[in-house]
Image 1 (cartoon, helix red, strand yellow):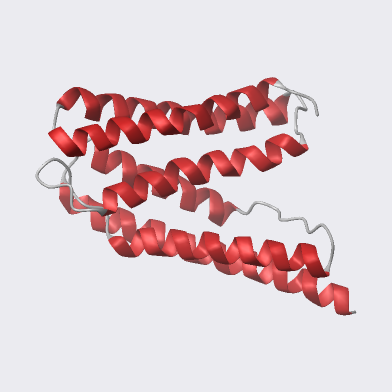
Image 2 (tube, rainbow, N blue to C red; image 1 turned 90 degrees about the vertical axis):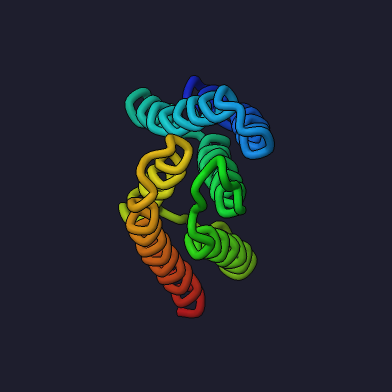
Length: 188
């Protein structure tokens, strides 16, 4: 396996996840502002890194199987852990991300994992192509997390979470449709 610059950026993003979680948990435990600022900064670095590694992979033809595996893993670790922690009652330090957003993200990801296993078992190696709805869902999820971490006005949390939930569900429906099509082609 080839270790490209894009893969190195992705691995760095994965290594930032425990730092983010530790700092966020420290802040929710003691309310010391430095922990919130570090958690926010680390989250932003990891989120920006997502765009950087994708750009490098496309621009310099560094797409690899390792990158195709690690990039979504880095996104899922960062977002799911952030959403789960921020869905807890962290008052008075932080507003709460609506639990229905976190539940939708978790449900979609579990369904997609099960679908991927099923498709790979029945069809062989299935290919899932990224869709714009999934990219929009990821951006909205990240925006929701940043909004809460930055302590921006709380009246925008529900509309942001609703948009993120809608696009997350829509992207899940598209991925289910793609999986269904792969299964149908196998039978034909």
